[in-house]
Length: 153
Image 1 (cartoon, rainbow, N blue to C red):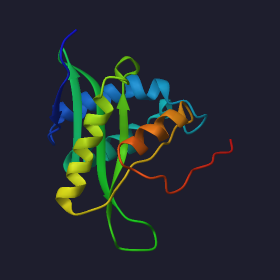
Image 2 (spheres, helix red, strand yellow):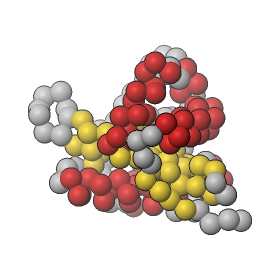
Image 3 (cartoon, helix red, strand yellow):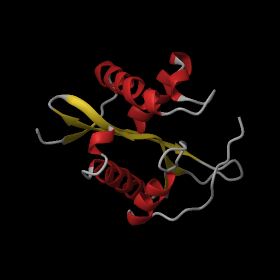
Image 4 (tube, rainbow, N blue to C red):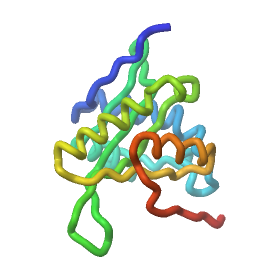
């Protein structure tokens, strides 16, 4: 099996197309939450969001020239303050590499980016699969849970 390599995405058409294709082919197929499922990907909304993340900061993990994981970040703030933080737009690793440190490395890049900008980092779980394991992963990475989301379809 080939080694996984990492690179920061650049703000160009090739990287935008590659990461969108990856997210639509993988994440969107797995992320099933009724009308909020990523399978309902909107090019009109999705492309500008992904492009803005490439402009801010995003990375991919690659193996044999294929993307196997990615994280995209943005700068945002709570509705009640001007104080900004770094938040994730997506974090996705293909299932067969989820125990191989790929997500840890991608989250490490996000932590470094937030630190370099002097901003807090907040990552979220917007999925109902394997929630306990994901919570444990983030706690091991030094995060603390600060809330929850609830969905009624």
